[in-house]
Structures are given as C-alpha cells and as structure tokens.
Length: 390
Ligand code: VNL
Image (cartoon, rainbow, N blue to C red; front, side, top):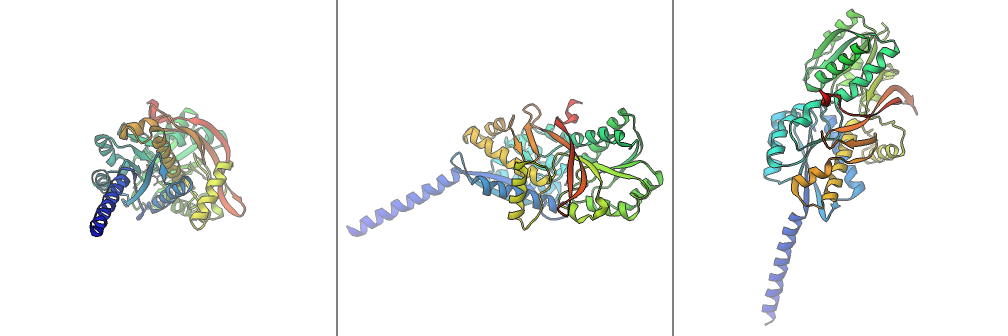
C-alpha cells in the first residue's frame, strides 16, 4: 500500500515535471540574434550582443508571461552562413524573431526566409535603403545611408567645402551614400570631382587616397562600414592630407565611437552626420552609456549598440502589446508605428515603410574629459529615409 502510494506520487511528479517542461517550451519566446562576432565586422557583433544583454538585464526576461531566450550566432559576415543560420533558427529552434544583421548582404540573404516563415526580421545594423523592401517582415532600428548622407551634403557647401571627392565601400550602403550625397551636394551648388569605390573586403585605401591627394579637393566625403574607419583616418593623416587643406567629412561610420578615442588628436575637428553619438547630451543616453560601460569593462557603446538596444525594445514592446498572441503577424503589427525615446533621441518606426525615422545630428570630433567624442552641434529633426521616396 505504502509502495503504491509512493509510485503514484512519483508518477504524478514525473507528469508534473513533463507538463512543466512543455509549459516552459510554450512559454519561451526565442530571439535568434545573428551577428558577426569574428572577422572584419567583429566589433559590430560585440557591440550589438552587449547592448541586447544590457536591455534584458534592465528589463527582465519575462514579458507577457513568456520567458525571453536570446540565441546568439556568429555569421562571420558571410551571407551564405547568415542564411543557413537563419534557416536553422527558424526550423530547429523555432525562434519567434530573427534579429541582428551586421552587413547588408547578410540582411538581404535572410529576407526570403523571414517572408516564407512569417518571422519578423529586426535589422539592427545594416543600412542600405532598400533592405526594408526585401521582405514585408523586416523592421529596421539602425539607420539608412541616404538618411545620414543628405544632411552632410547640406552642411558642407555652407561651410566652405564646395569641391569634393567621394570615397565609399563598393557595396549597398557605400553606393547609397555616394548617390545621395552627390545628388544633394550638386543640387546645393557643389562640385563632385571624382567618385571612388574601394572593395568592401580587405580594402587597401592607399592608392585611393593618393588619387584624392592629387585631385586636391576642398573635402573628402567617406563612407566605410563600422570597424574600418580607423584605417582610413590613419592613412589620411599619414599622407598629410589634413595639412594639405583637405577636409575629411562623412557619415558617422568613420568616427565610430568604438574606435574614435584611439584615433588620436589628428581626428580632432572632423565633422560627420549621423543618428547616434555616445556624447548625445540627454539623461536617457547618459544612463545608457554608463550602464553599458559598467557592464562591459568600460567599452563605449557605438551606433551599432544603440541599434541593438532599441531593436530589443521594439521586440519587447511588440510582445507586450500583442500579449504573445497572433504569431509573427501579430508581432509585426505591434512593431509598426512604435514611437519612443532612444538613447539617440526620439525615434519612430514608420508603419508604412517599417523603417526608422529619427534625428540626424551634425557632430564635430572634440575632447571631453580628455577623450575624443563626436560632439553634436546641429540637428535635422525626424528625418525619413530619402531612399523611400524614389
Ligand atoms: C552597413 C552599413 C554596415 C553601415 C556597417 O558596418 C555600417 C551595411 C558594419 O549595411 O552593410 O557602418
């Protein structure tokens, strides 16, 4: 009799455990974060992962009764790898959201998977305008190159830079930067003497910079992806191009907060246009930067980190609003139209385009507390992606 009671009790316990396991599975909400953690874009993955973990530490891992699980995968910035990882995450892990995407080709490689599986794809880094048109399930929390570039094309000719050469990485975001800078710059009365494109992988900037030096423009407009800016800056200075009177300008990718403080005083005075600076003077940003540095051995967050942090916010709030109902479509609907204060300033997910509308700041590299920062001195408010109106 005693034995039988024991058996029954243990059977009940096993049953309870089983259903707890099933429940736990049902109650898990999985985010598959695919980023480059190694290779040329490793800093992008490091920044985004750190920011995603910070967001979770600050906001807990229970949302709408579900336990959030973050699955991080390294795609080494190879689009075929990104695609395979996304497939595995959707089919095997049954993730609820795909997120990350360090470079444009990786974001584009996953778009068909997002569409077929009706899985929201939150692009936290890649910034070619057309990405959001590759799938109705893509939502972007980073920026677009047209968005950042036109503001520089408005600022430069008013500030003595009338003849420029452009130098961009030869792929999606670089071509966007070149096109939108050039069009607006010429519209504003400027002259583009030459448009140079450097290979995206293992670029050698030297021969291109020599060409620029010989052309002797007022300014050199540069776009290179996050992680490559320091190399351009070094060679620009080594060639004495600043001393020759050529002003280095560009989108903020070149004075990336991840590298800026190590670029040396030669970077002082460089003006760029971008959506995020670690020096953005708002209480929300101070709190973000302090918490990020505290959690990451003093690492300064860059614009990739803020894209990751805000991307997590968009996912959390969508899950809350849809109460975990409605699957991918329910989530997507709740991502559209989100309006909130980011560490970068106000930001908005345009419901029509699923792209980010945000302020673009003009910033100058200056010293604050002995460190180099992009110090904001002007703002163009609520900029929509100019690439979408074409
Ligand atoms: C892209 C755009 C990548 C801007 C970046 O860094 C960047 C992209 C990795 O769309 O590939 O700063």
